[in-house]
Image 1 (cartoon, helix red, strand yellow):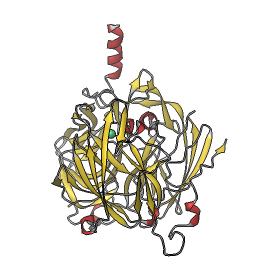
Image 2 (image 1 turned 180 degrees about the vertical axis):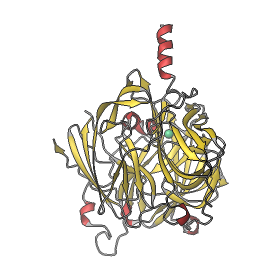
Image 3 (image 1 turned 45 degrees about the vertical axis):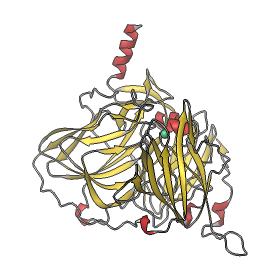
Length: 479
Ligand SMILES: [Cu+2]
């Protein structure tokens, strides 16, 4: 018994935290599907397949037979036409995390369920005015989010153009870095993903080598697209120059040594190569609370800086302005309380129910939400279809640098946010929830409905095409 446990521990060791195996693989960005003539056409087939994670072959729930599926790359104004084929043997669906698009019909509608051997054609119109940045797509099947995303059913989604305002940054090396955590039990990926023991990979690679020239500026687009793990990012001997969070450009470059990336969050940074040498890009140990998870220290990649040195390009000093929501009147104040008992998670005392609308808001309103964590572990607050501005954490004002779609809520802490329900494209029903997926699956999610304003003496006034307003019927076809 002891011997077996020892062997088991040995098998896990190369993928678990703490012990960083010698860097052996070379960094590669995930493959991409790029839009053309205004349309991004893609098919994703969900199913079980043997995939390689580091040097191990494991059976996992994935898209297209690979642990890291293609990054979808589109431009504002494009339409994503995505055929989802379900060969899992259990229902699934897709969420386009962070996109400010319609939650109705065949668009970013998480009330759609695609049954076994069914096919669903998503059609997501990205507004011309949509912001550029790193988003992601993932399964959003309530009750199975952890097992599906933790299995590997998540990928990157980029709206191009984030560096357009900066002529000095044109042509710099871009690296997409997608982080996943998965529990590997023998030769399968498990259903439950405990951050204390689960693997950490970057683009499915275990501690790959990443090259940079001394003085060179690279653009790293880092996404936490796993199930449950937090990352506390650090690059030895280097600073991060943050230019975007959750696919939203900041109003200034923020220099930092450490970045906390809860499940679902993204950060886009400039990195400038240091003196020749090897540097660890790692996630430092992070404990999410007495009832929470122990995230061990993990080396995510090994950076090799080498000569001959390049003359560093100057970093942008002025970023385009971002509207400060504190200048808008607040139409409503609400309190959102996260709580839990063993095995059950609640928002305002209730577990998620698909058919219940928990919050109704009026299109055009900016609301102030106070997110209160009444538990002994961290949670995150994430809302679909829009971004919010964090104004206070535990009573302290937060400097305004931009907006985001996901925020960490400290143990027994309070986060105050301003939420703009102002874009007509978001009219309809969608959800807000904790993005630790084991919590979401156990009930920590709620339904919100954004109602359009009524015109006196007439039916609803809407700017959207009537076709999008029909009930979200998942007209799937058998294959
Ligand atoms: Cu949570």
